[in-house]
Amino acid sequence: QVQLVESGGGLVQAGDSLRLSCAASGRTLSSLLMGWFRQAPGKEREFVAAISWSDTRQYYAESVKGRFTISRDNAKNAVYLQMNRLKPEDTAVYYCAAHSIGGVYSSSSYNYWGQGTQVTVAS
Image (cartoon, rainbow, N blue to C red; front, side, top):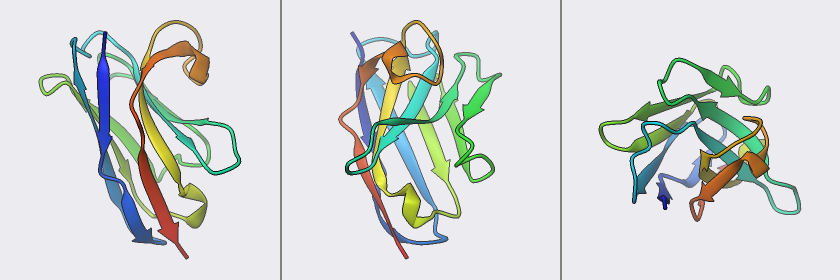
């Protein structure tokens, strides 16, 4: 079992930055690929970014590439999402997730999820 807790969300202005954190307990994350997803009101949950267990591969949605950076600290059992140059369309609840099996970009491939943290970007 893995328990994931996100933090770091908030209300910011367009162009600002935020850093989301995901703290894990229950088991080590060091062998797991970890991802961030987001869900805006009335929309389906969408992939944002993912990082391999060894930190050698990172994956990004086209909409955030160049603005967001995913990282991890296996010693702290944590994953981070640095979000720069935020836009109003980035407004959503952001979820941290642990990958199980299947494609990196599909939410169905992740079997552990946090409760989410709200990010609101005002224009």
